[in-house]
Image (cartoon, rainbow, N blue to C red):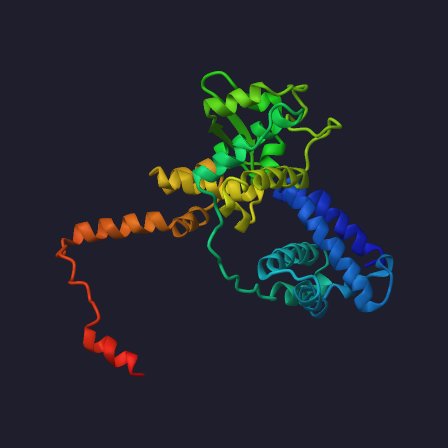
Length: 332
């Protein structure tokens, strides 16, 4: 193939394969874009030539492994991020395999690179009292106050991802009964979530733009960014921490509000399959991880098991040290 065939296949991968064939979201396209920007810059240094002179022969397994190692050793990425970068490169290798079978063995070696095992840590979430304190920290007398209150309430009410909340247009919300919002999730899947009366009231206080414009905007009238939402939340967490010091120990991100919504639904007795649809999870296994996060729920399960087992409830006699034992210890 020609020298510029790498560029041609990268263009067809993004313009045709990802968008038209797979129908991935713009968020996924941007994530893949960032992966390949890092990857090609790494290849340029690895082979000591400009990016414009990279060849299809350069996209090989040893270079991919070296790239993944650099992500972890120099950039400080964890196994989960490393696996996401590898997934993007694997998808591209599949695309290359279909369009350039002459290098089938080279691409097959990339496809055989295994993912790393990710250690699942307990999911971080906030108790309802913490969320109420954060929302109460919003000062609605200042210009962005109405927007910030509506945004925080909507994120917690619906468990929306940040990208889903920022994509909301006036045509997607219904503030009269039945109050609801239409969200567009991963893979362009749509779901409808009900709104609390308090959330609907906060949304009514916003200056509603044209039907095709985002409702959550910055001071310049442009759509808020993911970093902008994280900055807004951090501000109010700091304010709320003055009354609830335990918030200082937590790293509260917008996604933590999504986790908090899921755990609150579980605590309310909502079935896991319903929560899966509410949050827009593709698999119920993703939703089930919230079952392991809440200690109070585990206590209730243990108590229900104890009651069902019908074992003797009489507590054993509490042990107390004898005077002889204490006297012995004093002699040591």
